[in-house]
Image (cartoon, rainbow, N blue to C red):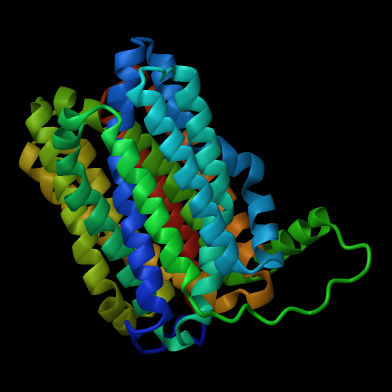
Length: 403
């Protein structure tokens, strides 16, 4: 096993900073899941134009392309803890105002688009600051376990606890899910504000330094690190494939497989269960294989799942494949996040993670367009096969990192 691929063994302690950060992340994801499940229903009640409804989702990607790099540069300049709780307070205020608008019957598609754009714009700063903050809360050898626990907790809160509550909350009032989301942002802000974390040591900025120059430094740092460059390439390719798959999965399951809405619900549930299992297994698997090899193995297994999904016309096979796909998707995500934190200099981690995220997130809408075109032109199963091809390319790019 190479030095790049070795895995320090350790686990974060729940007391102190990590426990509060974990709680804030899980509470916030719970509220986000309530909103995410409720927004499409609200959009559909306001318009029957598919393009407008899809645009609400599109506004969730656009700020990453416009402001992602800027968010990383700002995260490296400021106290990350303060930036995070300030962002959460701003998001709480936005969601509370939106809940009032919905409750008074003033919701509109234009307001939904503005909300989606504003929330994701704030998220570009929050996510990059969170990535940079975690290494100051847990020892380096515990980063992998900390990321696994964070992602698993968020998956459970968003995928299993929040979604079933949405119908009941909507019965109580159309504004209730959004009000609940505002409350969770407020709670998360209080938890993060209570953290006692020292910001990373930073060299004094040179006179005349600009945000544009600092952003360029972060992009260059990502590009010059062979491992991070390979991880970014592979993750971007996978996200293009995921965009193609997710955008058309409902058509694949209900149309090509003929499994109906119940079949689609089962496949989504299988993916969620698999993701939780993957979070529980990620640390142990990484200790056995190493981080890069763990991602390589995950990509190979996921490619096989996509091939079966696109060629075997059986609902049971699709459910199993998406469950396994979820397991190894979480293994990939945990190792990718941890390697970025381990290899990125602390004073540049916000900028490096923002460059990484901007490229990777930008792949999803591109994949959605490609998946839609493939489904329309060659059949509802072809997006899964297109995703398989992209995953093969991703695995190939990782192979160059394994000595």
